[in-house]
Image (tube, rainbow, N blue to C red; front, side, top):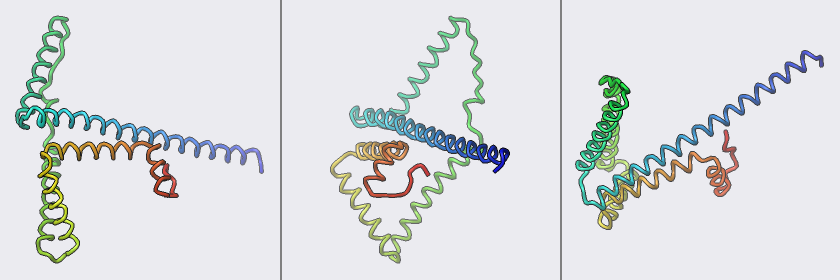
Length: 190
């Protein structure tokens, strides 16, 4: 093997190592995002739960409280900036969403409601016995849970479990521990 061929092989190995390191860094970065989103959702859910369950307030009063706090915060910041002679241009177009984004949100909502309605319609016909039993048992379980706890408490518990699941999925060490616990032999990093 000549010197040029050795350099070429070494260069390929270095490129493979760089790709592998980049893949690991991307995986770590994505894992951090999932954990951060889970924590933000948990904090927001905790605040909503506190407002609705402990203060016995409605969701409408929660939204109005949030808007009042935002309005007061922006007013105070505006007064501070005016006192410090800092000009902050506020462009109202930055606060608007595009028509495509609004259409995408409405389409997602319509698809979600349509899918749920479709599943319930198929279950109601009775042709698919397994689906009928799943839907019936799920609705009975939700009814039984609803008798023991408030709806907001059940929703908050579901949010906590979802955040825990998201955090576990985003954490490499937890995923590898779960793979070891359940006896999976596939490589987690792939």
